[in-house]
Length: 485
Ligand SMILES: NC(=O)c1ccc[n+]([C@@H]2O[C@H](COP(=O)([O-])OP(=O)(O)OC[C@H]3O[C@@H](n4cnc5c(N)ncnc54)[C@H](O)[C@@H]3O)[C@@H](O)[C@H]2O)c1
Image (cartoon, rainbow, N blue to C red; front, side, top):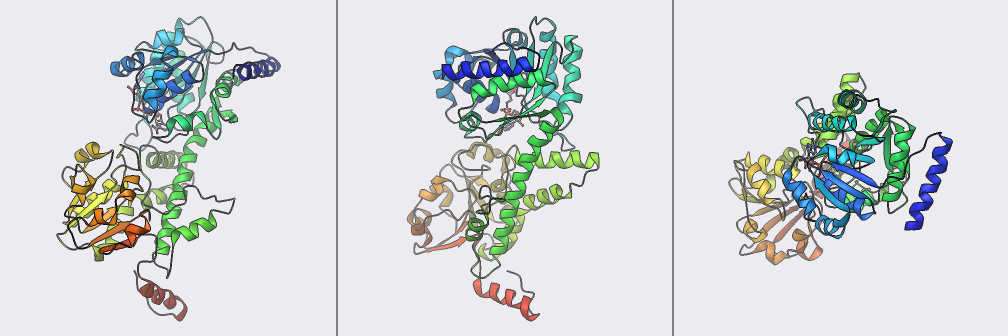
């Protein structure tokens, strides 16, 4: 590994000499914002041999880092931080961090604002503190914004703050990059260390090269770096998430088709079209809508910028509406399985398995839609119960255990393909009852559960009623029936 690092350094130095500037080998890095992404980046960078100074306005986060504990919740992070505690330290002082490092990553929140854009409030605060530190910094320092922002935010929203508070010029005294990460909560360590590629928006070549040198030493998989202007990188970042949401919605639309076609099976269709290299199979499984802290808001934000600039972005709006309407559409479709005043169980309240995050979760939307029908709704999630309890206060109960959740439910809806739900047997689902209807949006339950006596299994994305579907389809060719399923 050491040989690799030096080889990369010499390669880089050769390239930089061609570009007529020199950078020192970066060894000390600051990570500003020790949350779910920043805290994990700090641990990963330390694991790759960098000395890392973590900064946060939250004292518990700083204290955790100094005590060798994870400053935020993420799978495997406690162990990673503890193993690399000798190269990690925390401080509440932006100045201490900037003066003690050659490059800093800024990963503070950029929450959505009323317009659907991303607020720069936290980033502006961090950039002001960094600018003041740069004023007394006697070496060239590269500031890398990693938080998700919209096109123009880095150059027109944040750079002026750095220049104003430092009294220095970008490109001359310090560098500025925009370099977001493509990670999923629950697998942030693996995703961060094995990216498909690094996206680097650069103010100029000097800071872009500095960041590329860090990336080269961080990746476990020789991922390439794509360097470009700040604005192109900002657009690329947000359009990747937005494009993936389109793919998810397309798969969910296919599931809807398959429910209406005799013998329809969305997995058969997705497996086939996923073999086409132009399409690919990932994110093409018909399921139950996308959610979480990134996908929905990124799509809305890109739409906002497009509208502002007069770009043709109706597609983004339609996608968002389609996704937000999914719980309500399914509740209408599933009415025949939902007896008035009965108890229904919703399994899966987080936006995906193995997550405690309920933001924009389809499971939560589903509970609310079911409750509006007057049904007694009871939910359960292996990790997200606490958050869900608050969000569902006036809509649904949240059970402490899967067994308790199922006790009185005559209909059970499974919204995430969580192992806990797959491992429950037919007997477990039935409990004391003689029959139960299981509605499985991901078709994830095993054969033994599906075929268990007393269980009526409804795999969504499969045809719901072959003969009704056949007659509706026949109508298309005989000019008859308008029947809907
Ligand atoms: N979490 C994800 O899955 C993910 C994925 C891709 C991109 N992002 C982006 O990364 C950014 C951060 O996300 P997160 O999930 O890590 O947020 P988070 O809320 O978990 O963490 C943010 C941290 O920043 C700290 N902070 C706020 N202001 C600060 C300041 N002035 N100086 C120092 N620290 C400060 C907070 O105390 C907090 O610990 C957001 O822009 C988000 O969109 C997140």
